[in-house]
Amino acid sequence: MNTKKIQLFLSLTFGISWTVGLIMYLSGVEYGTMQSTVFIALFYMTAPALATVITQKFIYKQRLKEYGLTLKNTVPKNLLIAIVFYLAYVLLTIGIILLLGNLLGVEGMGQVSFSQDDILGKIAESMKGSGDISEVKLPPPAVLFVAGLLGGIVAGFTFNLPFTLGEELGWRGLFLKETQSMGFWKSNLLIGTVWGIWHLPIILMGHNYPGQPVAGSLMMILFCIGLSLLHAIVRVKVRTIYAPAALHGMINAGGPLTLLFVINNNVLIGSIVGVAGVVAALIITLIYLGIDRQFVAGYKSL
Image (cartoon, helix red, strand yellow):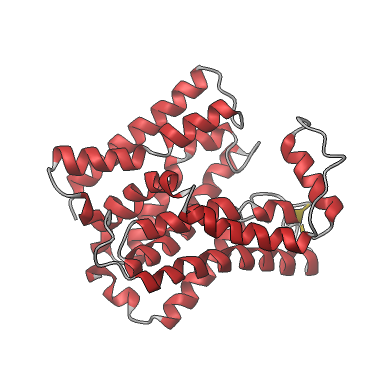
């Protein structure tokens, strides 16, 4: 583990991203606007990749393929793991909310609803009065749900990939490779914690947990730890950084689907970025490790 390289990478990543966040704050850029989307997508989220390129190529004079930026030696069939993880993550999150919310009435979990009126209400809520949806005609909720799930797969491997690669080249590229010697659990606990803290400026602006900056910042760390476990498995098994980037892109596209089909919930608890999502990620990880029993033991050398 090259501690100095990690420190340089993190200094650059946080320095770039948090400077972008500060510029947004001082400029009065409101989260959720097109301007904020451009700032975050093009400058904030790409910082880990930029920091990796600067560190690896220009300072250490080494190749990026060491961090998975290559398709050589890739195991294409293992890409199915990424797709299965994505589908399982969304469906299990919905299942947890259904069990704990609908059936057991756990406070804050909310309820899963496939009512068209509820879906339209969620759409109207997300638009914050910026449009009239009174004449909107939606397909049957079940069709909308399946289309959203499948659309997430397509988006993960296409449109979203360049953007999520901006994060993954750093987190599952340099950071994972340099901490792999710590072992699966310790490495991803560290990566997930740092990854969550890195989101702090945009969480304070309203990202993922609007109106809950402190609790949202803490939940983001737990959420990132859970996702780090899944992304690390995909990165190691497929042997390319493009695989976790695709998984990240699928979750970004299909994950918000849960927002349409869950009502009366606290986003900190009954959502894909809340307790339900974190529990789902842990369950999927444990099931996978129960199937691939050699993975953790061999993680340091994979």
